Length: 167
Image 1 (cartoon, rainbow, N blue to C red):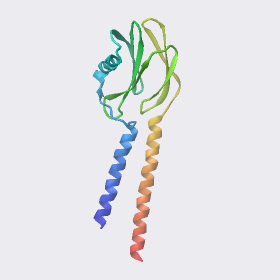
Image 2 (image 1 turned 90 degrees about the vertical axis):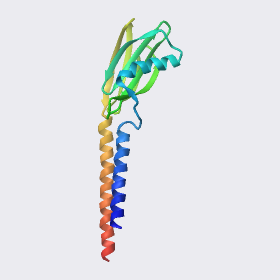
Image 3 (image 1 turned 180 degrees about the vertical axis):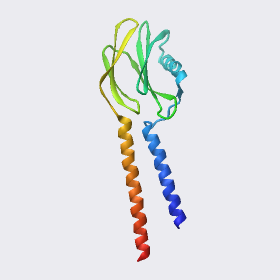
């Protein structure tokens, strides 16, 4: 019986660790290698029938990359977020570029807003708006509280079982 209880406890903590790691990484799987980000962006644009243009710029903030594209008729941008475990990325979203737009990014480490604008053709300006929120620190603290509660619960359960057995 003791072996079964140990196996259940170990399995529970391994499962908790795996779920915690998935939670820290934004509960998603990142599949795009860093060298393929531009190709992925261009492929997504071609699926929207946006062709013949070029990538104007690539800006990296914290754990995310923002790519800007322009052709004769459209201006587009995409936000890619990196996994905190590997050098693989995921496209967070692709949208049309509009002047002086502020958008929100959750890159698994921080949450922040960025504002971008174009003063003249070919020159893009990107700036951080406000203070970034330390998302990874908040998630780690939450995970620590859950693990502490699970350990304390298990200890209390074992002690209560021993008391029951001694009676």
